[in-house]
Length: 482
Image (tube, rainbow, N blue to C red):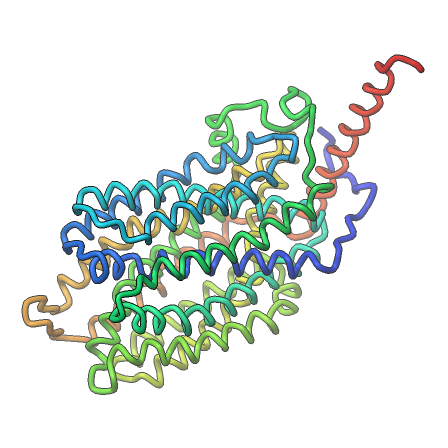
């Protein structure tokens, strides 16, 4: 390996439609989960009549199954190679898998609680694998499409952020009202929405499959020891990745900051129900979403230039330290104050766009560094590891939320809350502390600059080009003369 990166011989020129196509896949991802995540509990209990104890078991099973899939999706994507390329096959297989499994889940099969747990849990676990392979493949193809150019990568990820927020807002306006309208009329709205939503999910991925046919191609030298690809086991992938100090800072700081968000997520419902009871309670959740989502769309539109000026590390540090301020403000000023809640959430949403504009680019950078230092391409595996952070935070954060409820004066029998200010303190201070710790960890430990990441990416591109040229020359020399 050379002591310094070499410039790539040719800059990748990205076609203009690619950012919008990637935005379409991001919208599809958000659309696909717009039903399964928020409404699975309502479907199981209100529509299918599942008991609450059985629902608790179901949610545990589905969360565990989803978590288990994170351990295998990355290695499998990394070691895939077919005549359609490395990542492109998943653009066809995974959306169709999701379509079929979600249709089974929401078809409304009447069965015992145990049977429903087995059916839904199995479908959820396999569909979780399909979602993760889509995310991994999309991220890996993004790097191939954008090349080593940080500007190209930012353009794709920032456009994805806009698309995701837009579709989430639109689905929020349609999904809930349609379920409320259809259910009393004896219609299964969940199955209808599944057919529509997940049918649409397939479209941008199928298009992506065809337009990337010359970008993600079959590599006959894929498993050769000198190819720099996947002639190594999943254990070796984990070993090499956890020796990557830059990856460790991104990974563990994301878990720490995510822990704060996951710990308060179930408690926000209690905040609206009890702290704002005199102002309208649960109805204000929809009002807050109506206000904050357009703010997020505007932020995703206007903040990418600031993100590019700051760079990936400074953008991430800024967002995490700023979240400390908004967390403290939430703790002190939102008890019984809906206006303060909306203002703080909107400010937080706007500031977060500085970081979310970069999407998975931090993981892309650490994968470039790892490929440069090891000579092995592990991008798919590393992108798969990024799926673990939110899931691990949820596993740890949910019991914390239950503990807070048990010690915050909540009376489940009488359905009352003794001290909502104590609840607001936790809702604000938990993410503030988590972001402070995660921000310090990342700020002090992550040392990969944007310039170095670009150099590593260019070097890796050149090495791959040289390997391909050498392989073609060897094949030509071995071919019999005409």
